Image 1 (cartoon, rainbow, N blue to C red):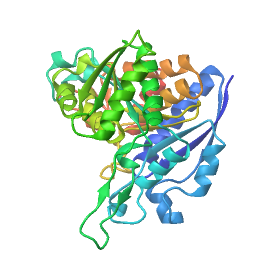
Image 2 (image 1 turned 90 degrees about the horizontal axis):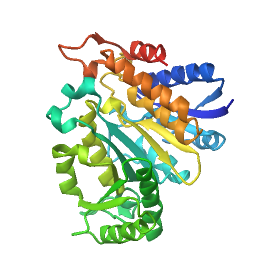
Image 3 (image 1 turned 90 degrees about the vertical axis):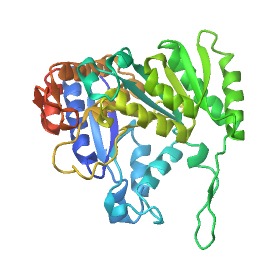
Image 4 (image 1 turned 30 degrees about the horizontal axis):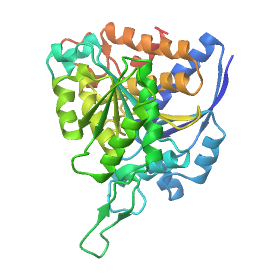
Length: 355
């Protein structure tokens, strides 16, 4: 029996709805396998700004520090959509990642046979797609020195990396590849950027410890193209913060919808932050149209990486696959051939009955 304390951060928009789905799944897993999950809810994002004036209140950090893992729904929305504002919802995400030193973001992308027709690529290109992005999460362009325009006529952001920062995330990628198809594609822009030349040199050095894993290098622009022309050729993709952010969102079309993708943000220990890749989707918030798959699969990743419950994680993933195979999908994946268009709660219930 495992007893775990989880900090839940529903956040904004559809984050509230998909978080409810996550907790229903966890409660069912707890009953089925004899585990006990305790939830402590806290604020992050736009709702935190409205209530406390900051995107990540100190109380949220304190609760997270006392927990085994954090589940996050989504942040942001039109109400706070002002890039020049001093306090923005996304700052909460960056701050919590930095505070807990969650330097590696894992984003799996796989295709499901019943959803191949929803992707904008030929079916033959999607056969066998099962890849994992390992994105560096606390360095690079998003965290380097910067200057806002303010009253001047210039602004800048800096892509800054140390050898140690690249080494640690590279080890994560190579270890992940050892349990998969033993191939890492390291994405950079070493032909232009000094920071990316350091990146490539460091990845090559780390690779010396993993003789059983093949390493290839790819420039970010060519990788963006190959994700659409030969996606099944990739196994683990290792990328800088911004590059990984963009490429993994691009790859979401391979799964049919951004709502399908989970993610895990990890550091040196077992603690992690788990969230769907999608945003707050304010246009459908409160309408029970959100696809909870990414959030549900994020729960599976949490069980696997933070709690060491591999069987329970597999149980959730199989239940999701069975639900999709039975023709049950949410509106974002529906078309004229769809058997059952389910709302958020109905899709969650369908997964629960297959656990």
